[in-house]
Image 1 (spheres, helix red, strand yellow):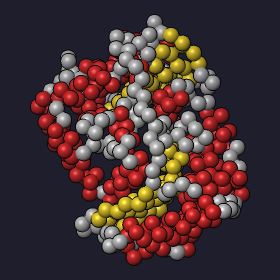
Image 2: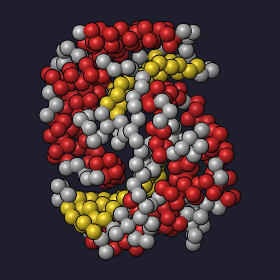
Image 3: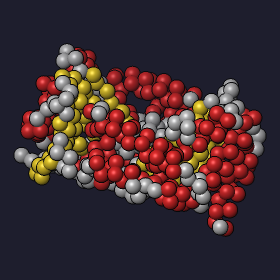
Image 4: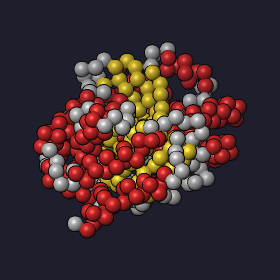
Length: 436
């Protein structure tokens, strides 16, 4: 029935591959009585042409609107009769469908998701209704100043590459995409080589495999949906949003992708801006009151990574916020506190361990590993690599980032000439480092 059935480096993780390439991932968590079941498809906005941008998200919505044998209402009722929670999401690099309920029903959930993912019928009337729902979602997203800043930030980072495209797509595409285009996209992208069936909970891998074979064994094999990685660009851009009272900022730099040496960047982000004792929050918020909200994170994806600082501030404090943030970043190219390093490594460890206690999050992390690396990283090794990051590693990472172009996106209440001022504030730091 299956090829390469084996345990990974973690004994509670079993991976099998069906003859058509569908991977079946079982995470045994006997301490929980529920089961989380997810189907991950390696397709998202990074896999879309410009004309089809938004198709992955639209297809995710339509998957629940009826199948060859069940109406939209029956799809919902069948799951809820078992007490199951049903959800789905689309990201840049994948689309996922989820059910969570009693462990005894895990096999049924696998088959239900198989029906939804493989046999959705895309009724025209339902498609037109869902088009309006997605347009409402688009309007809400468009009205969000920080969300708009992130979309602008992605374009600065990756230019015209598909990784820069918004997951939700464009208004024009949402209004135009046809049933034939959406179903054609699913036929092309939803193939065995691009599907992972994941189950986490108090379940038996052999039972999961039987149900996965029944639900996905006849799926066309296809080939992996591989996208060439983009070149990181950088730059400054601003967009005024009428009626906005605040200014939103997303400032960042390139990080290595998931398969690269990204651990120092992850630690650098936690060290710089995670928690109230971090330099960003202590200096920018607590001591200078330049922001109410600020955060720093590392977004590491298959195709690339981003070191991201985000904040909302008063328009008259924007220049001082950028100036102080750049000063702190440059300071960390020379001086990284051992105390801050210990704090950051422990914060990452606790965040990671908490995520591993959540069945859905474990499935999500494992699926990303399988798509990007072809394997599931052992948990102990993942933590060990973070703990191995040194003060010198973090200093070198800050130097590497600041020696390359920054990306600075500004939205909301934006004054005249703000882009030129931001360039003047972020460029000298890079010039000093290149001259050193």
